[in-house]
Length: 553
Image (cartoon, rainbow, N blue to C red; front, side, top):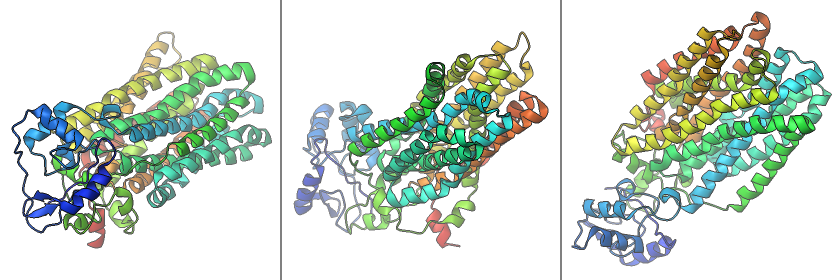
């Protein structure tokens, strides 16, 4: 029997209409379609043809108002939600009438949720980048070498690394929305403790930065879980782009704002300020209230619409298809099965995402961590100038993400394979930086002619790397909405490992070789290229049934 998707009216009374509809029903093939959108008959579902000869706009108006169809949807286009009560002409009329309330057709609650999630991402990178900018002044005050700075920076990534798998499990069990609040509070506390810890010595400071990393380590999996539970698949890249671009926005704010505070009040107030902002965000997050979760079947309908493999993890979908009850939400399904770890690690597609995540994070963390120091020591910039030139690539990256995210969704909705789109975007995010960093290496830093070329090449390298937000941070949800947060926990564990290694190794290599080319740029080029090859060869965005594979072992 065909699967049907429960829908909601634009005026918010879909649930009441659904209850009334379940009493009298609507004819649907050989069975009966209740108002909640679940077939209660046993015959084959047939496409319901329109019996109205009215114009498309009039038909759409009836859909919006709940007439003609018993209930209407503001969250899923009819061809995506899979509603069998709307034929092709009526679907065209629905699209012609335009989106419902909210931004670009999204419910207002989802818009608020995505907006606050973006702010949380920004606060996360503010907490991280503030130390990168302050490291110059702190090194002078405390007499640190580059290797000492590398140890302090790596401490954050150690905490980040430790929380990836636990973070995925916690988000799956308690929801990403709840976990994200505590994540922000944890890293805010660690950030506020940084000045006191630094005055006590390197070890206490490393402990405080590890606490920051523990909180930030919960954030990516929590954010992915929020997107998987609440954001329709047809808006996936746009919303993921908005949320994960917040990290770049936070870096920009930190790089521009920290030098101003340093010049006027010293480096300590920046850490206290970020702690206060985190507390204020948590209050707003609580005040935002609850947002309704997606029906699980919407993902299966989306996979069918784009022509991808339907063998996707959909625990409980047989219950829906048999008409034995209302369709469960993503949240109601999560946690009903043991996590199929063996299937994850046996999948070449998962390992391709691991390689891509490791490569993307190596370049991103190595460059954002060490560029302020590189600009200061190699190109002779002061703190303000170093912060400004580190900001420019991030601003370009925000623009790239703003372009690539809707472009990805549009290509998919036009019929492109999801896998092809994800490979295209991630290929640009990995091979593009490798190309531009090779120009940096060829230019050679410190010569009279090269600084402008070096700066331009670094800017382009970091900018094009943000094509990843419309691929790397969507593919976990493509592969398995049920296990999206867990999958991100796995791949981001290796991504965090890249941060740990690159932050420390770059500083140690610089002290040993005295060359930024051998310590920063050439290693990043090599990692980018290797990760890009693995991604293009093995990445697969089709729905994966990890549960079935695990049971078959």
